[in-house]
Length: 122
Image 1 (cartoon, helix red, strand yellow):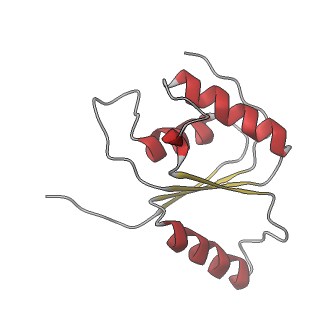
Image 2 (cartoon, one colour; image 1 turned 180 degrees about the vertical axis):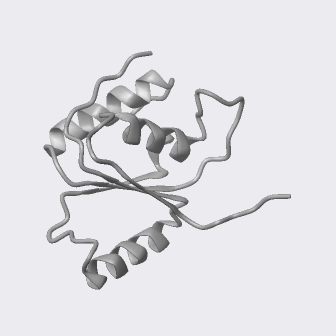
């Protein structure tokens, strides 16, 4: 029996830099490091801080760690929104916009990442 609960939302607070991005990459590609196999699911990743170049570098590094080519279509399931403005989850317009964005990509995971640093270790 398979149970689907709808998109999961992860809100990071900078305590574990990189873990939200690592989770996003693994879910989007089905490349889970701790389980034998997983079904990929689209991910909506909302990066609230950091530079676009830094985010691209972190995504590339993370993809390589789990054995993916960041320049291939391996990451097609990862949908990035960088620094949306305004972004206030206490505002119903923001929540509605986020829901629409998630639905448009069929997201099984929504990540709102506030961390700005990331370290990868194989």
